[in-house]
Amino acid sequence: LDQFTNEMGKENNWTVSVHNKFNTLKKHLIEFNPDITFEYFTREGLNNFVEYMQNVQIGGKLTDDADTRVFGMRNTSIKKQIGFLKWFLRWATGKGFNTETSYMTFSPKMKTNDGKVIFLDWDELMRVYNYQVPEGKNYLERVRDVFCFCCFTSLRYSDVANLKRSNEYEDVIKITTIKTADSLTIELNERSKAILKKYEKESYPDDLALPVISNQRMNEYLKELCQLCGIDDLITITYFKGNERIDEVTPKYALLGTH
Image 1 (cartoon, one colour):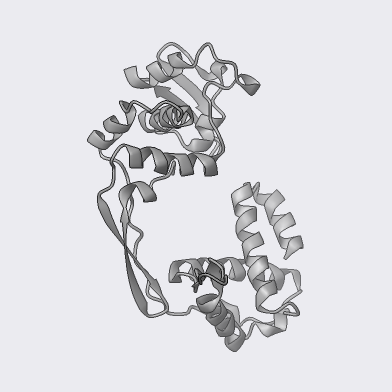
Image 2 (cartoon, rainbow, N blue to C red; image 1 turned 90 degrees about the horizontal axis):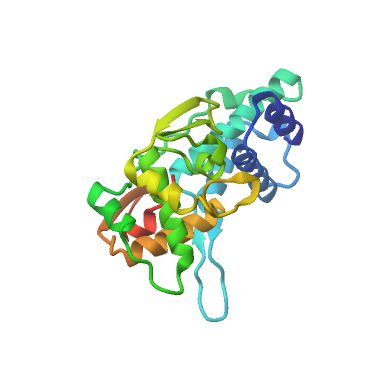
């Protein structure tokens, strides 16, 4: 598996996130069976691995005071893991490492549904854009500005994080995107121009244009910001674990992220 990720990573120019997906698969395989071999993955073995993922602990912990453990991956997550495993097994078969081909026709039937896309409508976005951040929470002001700049330009987080002042022109920005290597010219509106101007006298490493923090931290702060903005309509998210349908009701701010 390490040889696969090294070879495919170089051949397909994988991002860190793709490598992380296969590191997660490796972790699950080791926890499932530290002595696992290619020969194990008969139809029965594949079903056993699915059953493991349906019951594995995915969060929380057991303490003397409380049990917050959460067990069982969602069906959508299990199907992704099986897809990654089958990709690896196809590669291993082509290399001559694997002769067990049950994976080729293995397609477990699991209920799934299309994920609900959560987004801000225009009034909500304007509420965030115009929000007066309280004193002592200046970090939220920067998060607000960067997030709104993403919205006003349609740029991904990775591209805004890489945006340099040399990409700026009077009415446009010109960039090559990180994910797809597309060369884009994007018109700036009055709001995106105002955000760039606000930070034009600040100095950031590598001549970056905006004060972008890590994606994980930004997503955490974005939820805090949108909670303060009162974006708290209740949203029902439906997913399946095995045959069990689960409906979770969550305030909208808790579901928001840069993506």
